[in-house]
Image: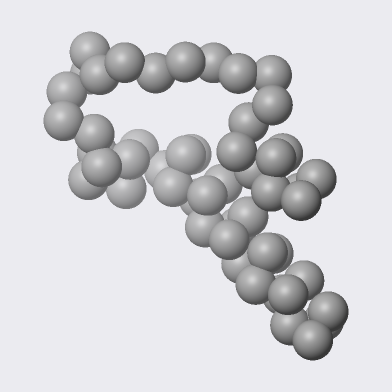
Amino acid sequence: MVEANGRILEEIKYFLETVSKEYSIRNLVTQTEKDFTRGRKLTLSKWLALL
């Protein structure tokens, strides 16, 4: 069970990193370049790693 949870978290982490870095994929989920974003010290991928 713990092993399966670890695999799921790794896959989520990989997905989030890919989406945040790939410009073409990111365009699918944003509407304009002026969409509000906030730079955080504790990013979602770091938060998931802590979880």
